[in-house]
Image 1: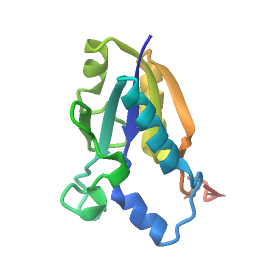
Image 2: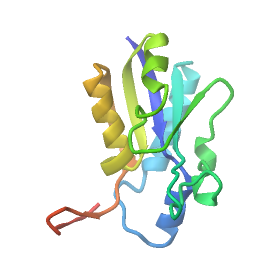
Image 3: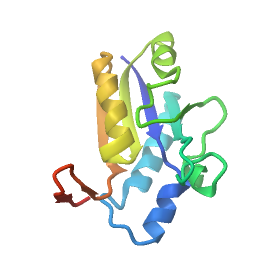
Length: 155
C-alpha cells in the first residue's frame, strides 16, 4: 500500500501563539513531526505539505504575514508537494484528492496543527474519500476551545 505523510499547517502562527503562553497539548509534537519527516524522506516515501493561507483580514495565517510562514524544521525540500488551502480541510478547493489518486496513494499518515481543526477535518474527509488514515496523535497538537454550549475544553 503506497503511503504519504501529510504535514498540515506547521506554520509560525502557532509558534507565536505558543510564545504568548497559550496552553496546548503534546509539547513534543514538533520533534515527532521532524522524526516522521526524516523517516519518510529516508525511505523515499511521499511527503506532502499543506499550508493554511487564509483570506481573512485579521488572521495570522495570511501568506503575507510572518505567521503564515512555515516553521524552519518543516520546510519542504525539493520534490515535495505543497498544497495551499484556504479553509480547514486540505481537500476543499485544492488538488489534494486528485494528486493522491494519480500517485496511487491509498494510506495517509497525518500530523501537524492543530488536532481539533485542520488535521482532524482533513483526516475525516480523507476517510470519507476511502483513504486509510493514520493519525499521528503524538505529532499533532491542540489548543483549548469553548464548545457551542459554552463548556471549556482543555487542550
